[in-house]
Image (cartoon, rainbow, N blue to C red):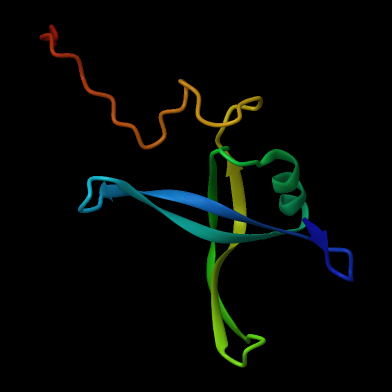
Length: 114
């Protein structure tokens, strides 16, 4: 996290998102999405997010460009977060047995009386 010259908090982090389907080698691929968050939400992210913690981000896509040191134009795609929700338990480093995000629970095989 850092502060702008005007004192506004800004934080950046990368969100790892697993794809739903496996590739040709039978492995799941992961996309790494750059996130930018501002003001109080930036301070909260700096204090409560760390590697392996689950988070949901709602925001807008931003694409910008700059000229690199070699004179080539570079493009950056990032999400400017409107809200960030912390999904991991407070004292957890990652997923716990209570996290069922993206997990389907199979119904029991026995016959129900209704």
